Image (cartoon, rainbow over all chains, first blue to last red; front, side, top):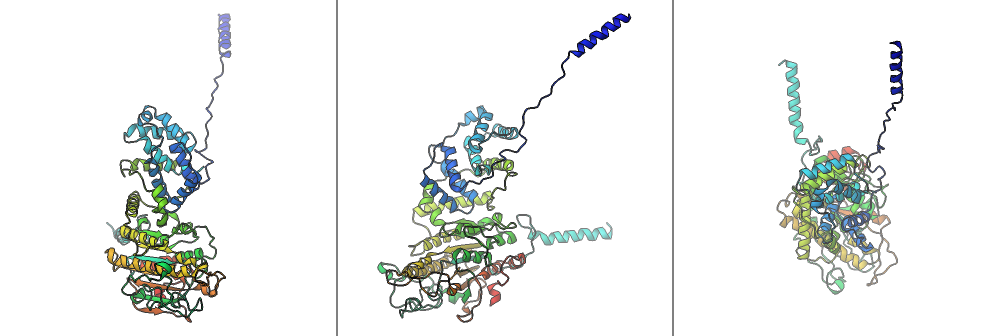
Length: 159
Length: 443
């Protein structure tokens, strides 16, 4: 009896002694806010150049940028000026927009691409979720309106 | 209810009833000065550097070129006979046809003329800043937003005037003019700024090319979601930088301004802008668009900048022509308000003040008539005049003289403030020149 108990205890010790300790690991998470280093305000010409590139995926000649800068300068409410400029660009042929069908088929991919195009970064999970919910819930949201909002955002004014 | 509780509740209710009418759209409570003298003010920055000799003193060529020809080339503004000979400031070849007067009675007759005021700066930007900030702007840099609040910001902050009721119409985007619609003062600034157009650019060929074909979006179904998405994006970003804000136009105001712009592009193409009868320079076309702004928005405060006379640095003949046209512009502006804007006729005050004068002695440049040109840097360049007409202004009054100057250009801010009922608030802010006072108090 005593030998049996000793044997059982030995077996238990051997069995538990071989078990590996669990290792807990965490994903690398950047705790900084999005775009922590964007603090340089674009000039009117830089804004117009980047906006045109984002919408048409082509550049503008220097004289056109100078003239666009003058137009923005001539309007006191710069936010309004940008709205008018964006809506003019949107009215021109050649704007390259994803289709609404493609956006709704894969909202996450569209959101990521849009953040990369306009804000030159990936969206955070919270941002992705907010836009995904909006696109899914509101059938009136189009790719054009999303692009409009990104082009108008304050973050798009900075690099 | 016990007596103490009753008194406390009754007191709170009375205080709320007293304060409620003074809570601004921003939620801020302010102490009202009392009613103003006018419902609208139009301030013309008669800028570019105007010599007293060719304006109020009506000396024409006599005090500049040594030729014995005197006369009044500003006969919409000032009373006095025009020159009879050596006419070069009008239209046609050689400028021999003076532009007929627009007003049946000069503004001098209709209002009060301060014959001899003092400018605090002999430079354009400093002068414009002193007119709009009400102080000497001694530390104001060029190409820099005003350091102290402008009259636009005082008006919007203390009287709760919406952005679309506060307009600055500039004749150019040069000379840092677009910077003048609000200051960088921390307690005022962009959120109390004025709307601004340099219409010769905005609605000129460049504007037509780049801004004149805007897609129209539905304000609720399309722009509503756009603004919501922008707000979300801005919220993510706002803790990073103090992003520049707009001047506080609401969505409805923006829609109204966009509709105005579309109308202007259309009317410009059709040649239907309310330009003065003669509109052959930038000041005159600027005033045409200023009339359109006034007609569309009925602003509480409209400031219009002119500066064509600055050609006097190298062309005295052109200076005389520009001076004559600036007078034509002012006459047209006042006539338009009286005859085409029924809601503003009778309750609008017009103020016209140069930002600085010009020198007593000429520089070395002679023009096509062999006439000397004039810069602006000496004591004579501190000599200016001031003219007011309309609501709250006594007619036929003249104040001051060549030997007895009365008034400073920095008086314009407290004067506009008095007209619009915020004088106490402006003075209490303590940011205008201590020597400044309302021109009504100078009288």
